[in-house]
Length: 248
Image (cartoon, rainbow, N blue to C red; front, side):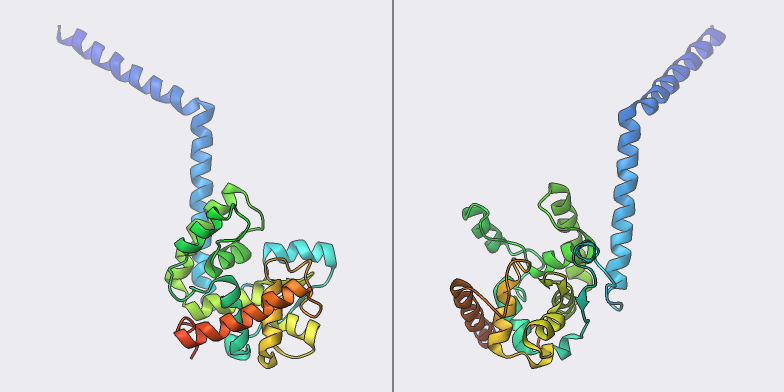
């Protein structure tokens, strides 16, 4: 009787092992394993780069590679935040993310406004745009948005607000094949980013949503009004303290 019980137990174990083996051979199982490994690799690489870019300036982005193939040599000059006119930094924040100093990467109110507006206006913060511009690609796919949502909190946790804004002002596209406010200042106004006037800063900030179709030196009447509104907004955030996190 003991031998029969032992044989039955052994047969049961072999049956379980066989079922597990067959499960491993299913195509879905291997797809799941591969996707998990790809995700883990992406998270690991992104984490490494987020920490690295605290000290090292991002050398190139996917968008820059893409634009290089379209326009040839790019115009780009990296400058530290202290070498950018404070009014330019304030103008970019006023134009793209007025609550930059108040949120942790996502502006819930801006997202609600964007949804209520039917998607006609953007709800991305500067931190989200840095995640997209530095680590990802342009576009509106759910995959890209999911990756952006994963990287943004990492950036906010590791980088200072000054570093986030510094990177943004140096990698944002400001014209066809032109990246960063230093290159834009020299290309459009023949001055350095440190010497930009309030009006010039407002004009550069006004083109950020569509830099390939807008020229800061030759804005349409509606965009001139937009630039003037940005200049007023820059003065407002300087007065009410919403620029304190990135100014000395």
